[in-house]
Amino acid sequence: QVQLVESGGGLVQAGGSLRLSCAASGSIDRINVMGWYRQAPGKQRELVATISSGHYTNYANSVKGRFTISRDNAKNAQSLQMNSLKPEDTAVYFCNYFEPLTGKNYWGQGTRVTVSS
Image 1 (cartoon, rainbow, N blue to C red):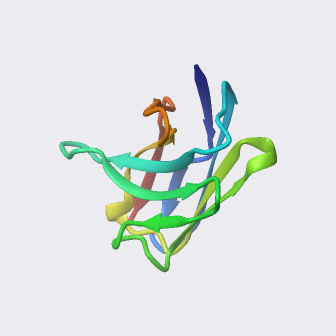
Image 2 (cartoon, helix red, strand yellow):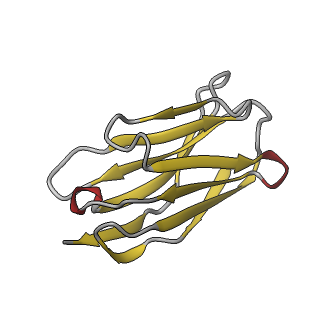
């Protein structure tokens, strides 16, 4: 089992910045992918960004150039720096942990991000 604890999020004006963090604990495999997904009201959950244990990153087109994902393998933690936030970034953001070799997949409880116009 893997437990994910998220922090950050909140209310910010358009153009502002927020930082989300997620710490993983439990049975951590050295080969894993951590990331963030978001779900806006009435919409499906969508990918925001992922980062592998080898620090390979992947971003949704809608956040490229504005968001930066990073991780600290020694702490089993990752962060998402969100800049130039837009109202359409408003959603509940979920931390995700995935092991490509075993298929294990875990989610955090979600943290709300609200961007006012």
